[in-house]
Length: 105
Image 1: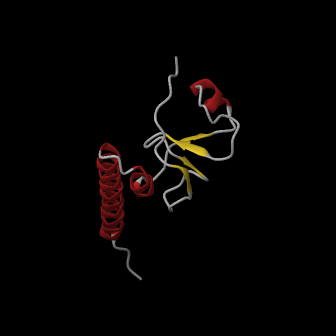
Image 2: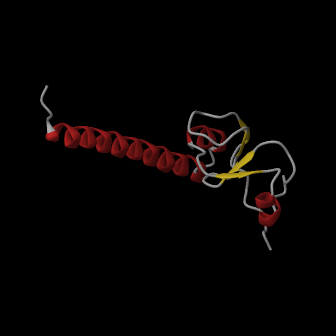
């Protein structure tokens, strides 16, 4: 049995290609969600957003942010300001789409 040291680099190249492709797809979703939100298509924007960053509404993060929905069920997306059932890329249920930013005063 022989060992091919180039195989390691080929596997890494494939993995880097897949990661870069995923990043491009995610970026395209963010850009499309931003465009939809800017023209007032809030529900469509919330459905396009990947909701991959935010905080739980029943948390100190919600309290520190002065979130008006603090203590409720769900999670706030930092990208589109929607409330979803869970932050993930696999299309969570949107509870409140693209809410306006509140005065964090």
